[in-house]
Image (cartoon, rainbow, N blue to C red; front, side, top):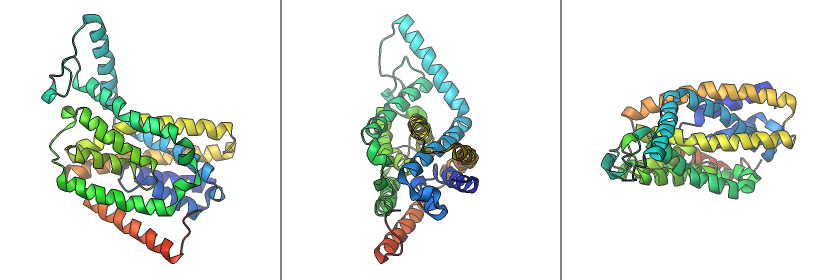
Length: 298
């Protein structure tokens, strides 16, 4: 992988990680067009996971104040619990938050709980996730369409009446299990989690913000693990690691702008434009596969 290829992958990652249109689908095509690693699926998977660390950095920077308030409140409230022996009564906001927890530390618990499903299943199916099957365009196209349909119904039936401060265990489970769909190529982490949030009755912007915060543990774990394995297995040379670092920076810059855009967009608009885009791309890929214009695998 040269510098130009890395920058292209970084820009594609930054543009598509947070917009609900599937970063994997677009990275697979970008890797094909640029012929990264000659199509080696294990090296491509490692590259995708490491470049995700750039978009993770974008989340840390954009939500720095939120992350600090959640972390500090989490530590403060639990120290207070241990020292004052307060009881666990769920009579906080609408009966969904324990009184001994602030809104910020309760959100911290929701992020932890919501991260358990993808963390567990991600480890169990790690080999399958890294294999060539996860780059199969039949799967990608199908999931592009499936999540588009899911988002359409979520927009139609979701009440969209609750903000972050009103989130409870239902939100953690709904969004957390929806995030598991991100393990399937073409689903989109943001698309599946926003869909789950809308079904749970969350407002669009609140669903997106919780989705981005929930990405932090999953992307950190997968990115660092893949980086460690890429180095230990010598999947990437020293020159490629330098190019990858530049691509990761590109992903961070573009990713930051993507977060800003999506949150501003969802304050006033639906996910309709993304639904239409996913349907069009998914259908086009299926037609090209059916006609034999492109192959399902590299």
